[in-house]
Image (cartoon, rainbow, N blue to C red; front, side, top):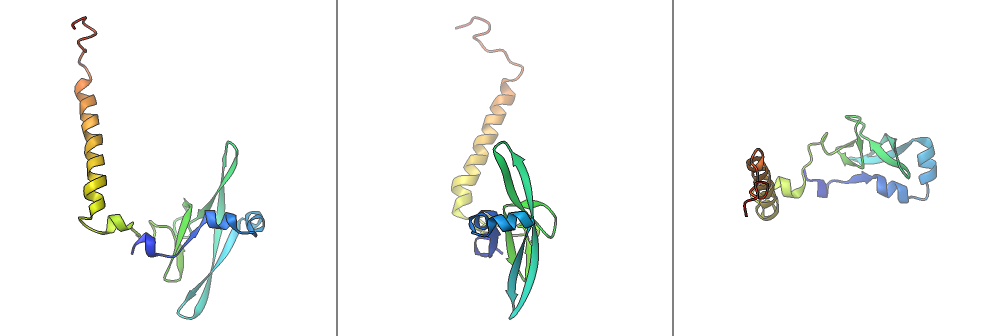
Amino acid sequence: MVVETTPRISIRDLRRQPSWPAIRASGAVDVEIEVDGSVVTSRIELLFNFVRFGERPWLKCPCCGSRRSHLFLRDGHVGCRRCFNLLYREQAIPGCRWKREVAVPALRATRQKSSKRQRRRGKTSSRAHGIA
């Protein structure tokens, strides 16, 4: 399954709801999911991380308990990307253009930088010796 095509719940969307103060005060949100004609209700807890200028809300994954900004709906259950083994489209397509043009060159560039740093360690530059 791919993240882009899976229905999801976002904390940003919840914060935009007119009922956000009530949701925040209750500390949880009830989600109704329709599966094969029957409605399944799931309760998702909210977690808050106190930051410098207030607090940041998170959704608690019902499966693993981790804090997430997005939870996904699949087969009548709610969970995070890791619990459902969801991949992004770029990760799911083997040999795709994104990997060739973006990911691999970026990885090579970081490897070259780190290897240059390792070669420089322990060696004194010519400027330190006064050699022009």
